[in-house]
Length: 267
Image 1: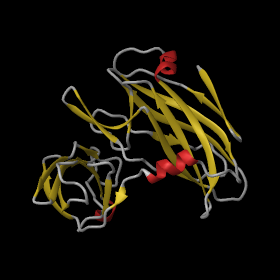
Image 2: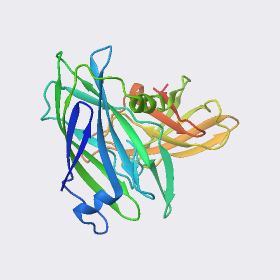
Image 3: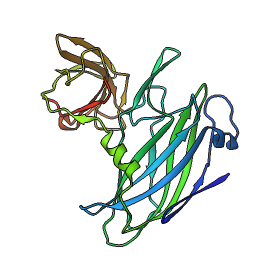
Image 4: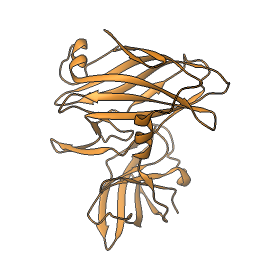
């Protein structure tokens, strides 16, 4: 099934290619639970192109953050067929935390704008021909593959929705992070200790990301005592590979209060 969304200066063709992981769902069911629009964006001062995908979800449905928990499906983009685009970075607004059936997941409900920053090596237009893989869930989860085809204008105007999504990202919290590593049978346990960010006075949800997407990780367990937070996670490398960690690439996201915080690097 094809759905067409027309925005100023851009025509987007979205092809829902596959649905259904747990439970059953017809391909046209996605029309009832999510609509997707590409916001064409603008060329930034440092030569990249800032665009975004806006997802509007039906009540009760959600989609996922980059580290969604053990039951979630993180969004991923393959832009290999694009022209004048050599890389893409997704900027994630602060997500929500969901609890259902004894499981925790992290993502978004209602409406979410995901800014996409494309590296554009040459002046002029860029042609986006990409596939976006994401998951949407209610009582069942449906992985979706969506084709995004558009011309990204070289002189597009700044988009308020994209700017608001960028401003909603977790704030950077510059504080020392202490890491302790303990071997386990199939990998390692990491315990990360740091001062509670400003305004975080009750136990938050924290997520540790090791900087390598091939490493499997458990949900992060968090404790808070006397203004100090300790977050713990177990990390398991792909079978047959050693577990190598770049301490400078470790990222901790603290979800508590109205806005999240992000900490980088490990002492």
